[in-house]
Image 1 (cartoon, rainbow over the protein chains, first blue to last red):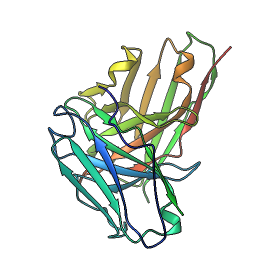
Image 2: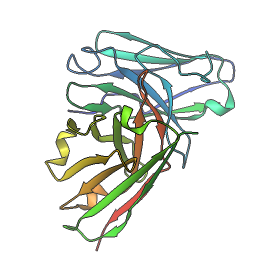
Image 3: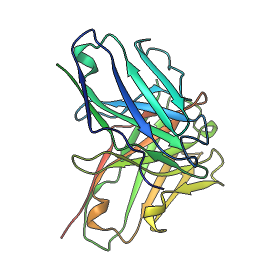
Length: 109
Length: 118
């Protein structure tokens, strides 16, 4: 049950796009369409941004989108805004348990 | 309004025990899986445990090695995390979270800090 692998950091200028990868195995990301993404600002609780790979909860801007190919899921933030600067974590169902990614700090330049 | 309020955190010596509680309100508690997630200072999120709506099915992170137990009382709208044989590496903020009907952990509490130290 190892953590899913994410790049430590990603950045982009306002209005640009940034894509974060989340690599697991066939026992988690590759085996189920139950990948979620969470945004966490410093000192705050995480917020659900994407569930079931591609779906957005009500209230999440459509600038946020998710996808998956094989054992790797991705989160794309289009039209970057200052408030998108935060830590992002992926998560996947893994059979009888769950696993989070290592986290990616997104910086808006 | 959905609310989750954790309590029970604090300072505990290595080898000690602590019981965290998470009081839920604003939704039908008995209809949702519930999860505990922790975050060490300056580190990432780590999934700890989950429990199904009737409390009969639970799951744990392998790394816990059987030291933690999740349970719930649907009459009290509360989920618990009993933590035994605590170690320094268990230090962190512990969040409870609701699994949404549609998917993902859609509501989170503000967390309770557990510090394991002499």
